[in-house]
Image (cartoon, rainbow, N blue to C red; front, side, top):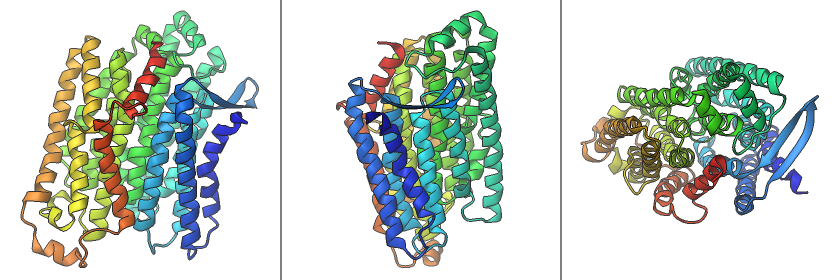
Length: 498
């Protein structure tokens, strides 16, 4: 029966998502029960499997798809790592979205596609071979598009078209790469140290192996928002706050960098990728993206726009780490998948609260808002400090391991990139914190939008506080057995065969 565990994990979000489509709009309690039951079930199920996976157990479901190619879903440490992040943040985002959309129309449609989005993300995490990965990767695109255009404004539809154009072209690039790969060496499964068939093929036809790598990377780079393929991300910020949170912290950009880790470490293998010479250009590309995203963030007055360009920069840390042949750097990269998710979802939650409660969407409007919404602004401040990389926050761990791994690999210039990035992070986050807490508010801002309320409702505020606290806890308790950092170490040991 354990072979069906991957299917059960998928079902915890797929079944509620499909059922919710048929729930009448006025049946709010039923819709809430379905959403929360699925989210809680996923958290419990994924959490119960972590210990077994770390101890070496693997659970796999396999079914014939087309001749010579199977659909494979597999529970292993890296899959569970991504699943744990998506499960926990799905639960919190569900609670937040219930409060955010209270009384709004078309909630069943929203939560239906929301569940399908999380199901597709789970499929990406569980994929055991490139074909299975591609199927769920494209389903993720189709499931998130209705969420991006949920408000159906002119801006939302334009942002949705941009998103769909970028991601479908990226998917086509991945498809071509996987078809080419399969034609050359047949179907391959993801493997801890890379596919043996790929190692032999790369030794025989290195130029073709490099071309396939570039094709697949280009497609993954769209969702991972690598420069210059990032253009869709800021334009997709017209989506509601729960969707923005999902795009940046849980689903789309994380699926992109998750795929890059699979490409480098689980298809090619770190040694083969290094021998082909594809890692150094990837390091340079990630470094350019990190600096570019930060510089663009400095130029934005819109709060969500600044956070969007911050994501472009911050997510590239994962690509940077996996492109450096160092156990420490890869550990930092994988840890940052969780660390960035916690910090960024906190910030987007806060941006949603500020917009919904006080109608504030621009940084220039936030003077003194900390006196009006102290819990919201405190949560934002914690996440921002973590993004800068100040200890003991989660973000410090990522940057420390990336920096020490760069030194370990002899790539000292990467340390300079990380230092510049942290300084730029401080340059675009600290002024927001200063404005929130120390500048005098403009009376008309509160008069026009205050509505006599100091904070948002508990369903919206609670998840914000929890993710902010988690940003601290993940850093302070990094040494406990199943902390994100220690799980990242276990995954990296498998990648390097330590």
